[in-house]
Image (cartoon, rainbow, N blue to C red; front, side, top):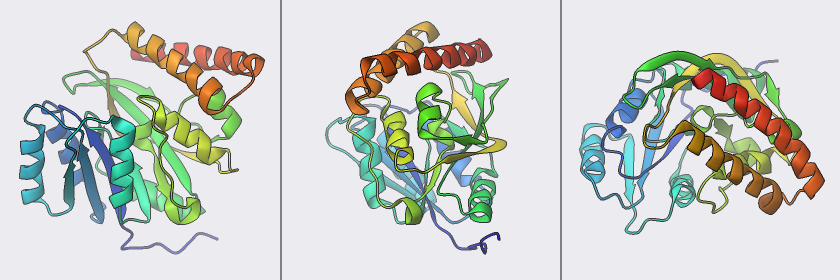
Length: 259
């Protein structure tokens, strides 16, 4: 039986940011445009040196639901996200980086999906956009369910689409990694027996950065994924190789979508 809908459920939006003056306003606006009004946007600035901090203060003046936190030293995205998680008041937490955006019904539709099935961990499909924010009409669809082993084979879960019910999962933090901390977090949660359920709806927009080459980004992601296999999950070498072959094949297919 479907759970009773909580009409006042607070969703804490977790956003790390660093020198994002070119994109942060678009990201914030996509949250403010949500049809679900009960959210708090916790933006942790990781010691930006541009106008990001000024923009965050202005945004907080316009909307009391926006809660910026300013770090004095740069610590990386994992530390910033964990700082936001520590300050989050909502039962539900959703993740959104400072260069990505959401569709207007993202929070409302995903919350309804979670409550209807009493899911603890969900994600959605997303659309690609270029560095200037123009949609490319290229979609990364969400599979119906992802287990721990399937996540090792295919890192399909987009961080910008994830929503988690902390009442079911308990308090969690991201490991202190400079990158791929989101993958390590999802694996940690799924290893407990949880399943990540995909919602077959495109509710987010992922920005492809123009700062570095796509091939360079993929190579760095591959090296970091291998690091997670061996140093975080501590998988045996042969098993790591087996999962990495599957990961590489799926990564190649995703790259073909983005070209």
